[in-house]
Image 1 (cartoon, rainbow, N blue to C red):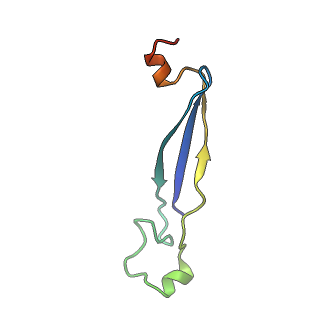
Image 2 (image 1 turned 60 degrees about the horizontal axis):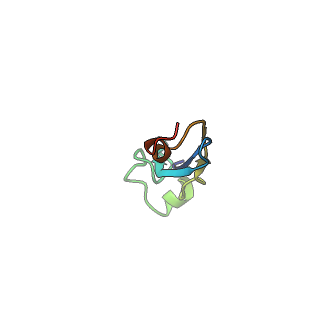
Image 3 (image 1 turned 90 degrees about the vertical axis):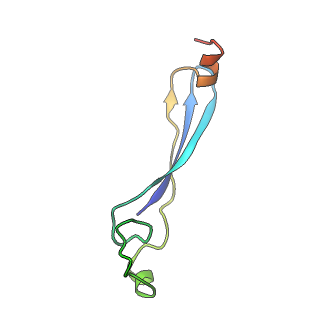
Length: 78
């Protein structure tokens, strides 16, 4: 199933955190109505019975990066 990926980079040296724009991860399933492989001929009511009608819960993660954020690096912190 297709889903959104939400990433929040956490910079350990300055403590700042920044959200990266959400990214749509597209699956290859022909049974997901959001997939590019979903056939155009699959229509309601059959589609509602056989295919996923919603995206999965967003994947969320926050990598901890052991350095200063780009703004702090630009300000000269090292």
